Image (tube, rainbow, N blue to C red; front, side):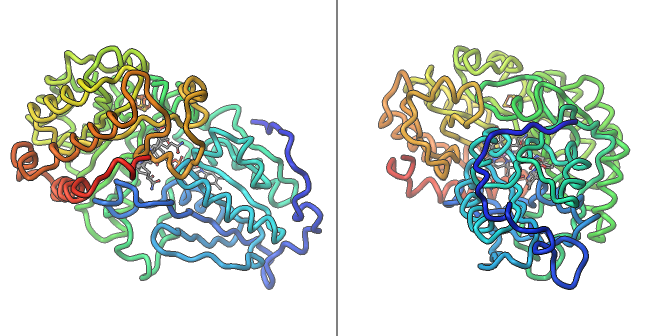
Length: 465
Ligand code: B12
Ligand code: SF4
């Protein structure tokens, strides 16, 4: 592991401060403020779900608290930030593209007050040069893989501009997050009930629009089923009940043959339910969804993306074959598992016909929870470079997959948005819900449909621009 320096503005005031000015009064331990910035606008996901537990930031806190005093604030659930950051030596902020503008605002304020600022998460990982303009230090990728060096440098006050792991740590060495960092009555009920869990990281598929291949390369790492079960038991003990629902945060839980079977087999009888992102090629084999159901699976999240083979080819999604879509859905639903299906619109191969094809597929297969997104070129992906000349703006607040940020090749923006809204309205109309839904689906899937039904009612093209 080594660090890579990049040129950056060295004039931040904190650089001139002697280290003793930065120590927290009355304590020899440096004090960290961990921040999850709020999102700029109402995200679709928030119309049917409370915010997810901030697993990435919890991992940072879990490591940091071994050496430092830690205070975690999540603006998404209404936590406020101090105007004056002088109680803290380090302000560590997580960011995705959608909330990075707010992250930079907080970072700039903390830098101006002489604090050391560490930025991490997906957006700083994808565009570290940009993030470096607002931070003392940018961490590229997962904190676990650079932690030893980072902690030493914080202690000696020799923070480098950039930390990037040369080798990703095996996941077997990674401890699980300490959820006690979120303890407190104020936080009760403010997050979704779904507990985040990581089984694997990375994905070998390599879609051009996705950040994962840039974050982890094509390396696919797995935790041992023992570690995962140990973590499930930790939550059961912590919360005093067995029947918990977990959301695997994995990019793709089934990228290695044999692993997923072993994991699911070991989860049978734990008394938990769960959902996960899964690549569809594995679901062609009926024994995988059958095993998943026995292990407690309620919902599988599948990226269908498009019904057009040209689009699938264009985005490099080699794991999808249109000819297997219906079989895959049937294999999953036969087990009583609901399908949360993801679809992207506005890619260059899309025409008005793409909407009708998607509608027909969804209704024919009674997709339990369809999720529609507008194609969004995230900075740092190969697709972003390709689209860059056609971008309408770089207002990251609108890079939330619910805004049209570039004009596609074959349809104009008006056609795109009119059809997009029409599809939302029809798929989530009362009639659409009656035709699609199974009333024995998990309550949160039904609530999700209802949430989107009301969201879809008032849509106008302007809100997607
Ligand atoms: C599971 C998941 C979800 C879940 C849960 C989200 C959540 N809050 O965790 C759900 C379905 C809710 C979701 C929603 C969305 N998601 Co999502 N999601 C993911 C996925 C697959 C895994 C995220 C995860 O939890 N990973 C595991 C944790 C442990 O990793 P981590 O959070 O990255 O944190 C590590 C490092 O980043 C680093 N780190 C993180 N923070 C910090 C801070 C500091 C200071 C430091 C030093 C280090 C550090 O260390 C951490 C520990 O290893 C990622 C893909 C990916 N690989 O990132 C997409 C991804 C993050 N999602 C994405 C998007 C677009 C969205 C939505 C905007 C989509 C939408 N409109 O609904 C929303 C936004 C929700 C929100 N409020 O932020 C994009 C983001 C692209 C971008 N450039 O920002 C990704 C990258 C997928 C993609 N298309 O490429 N998502
Ligand atoms: S299959 Fe999913 S996680 Fe894997 S590269 Fe494609 S979009 Fe990303």
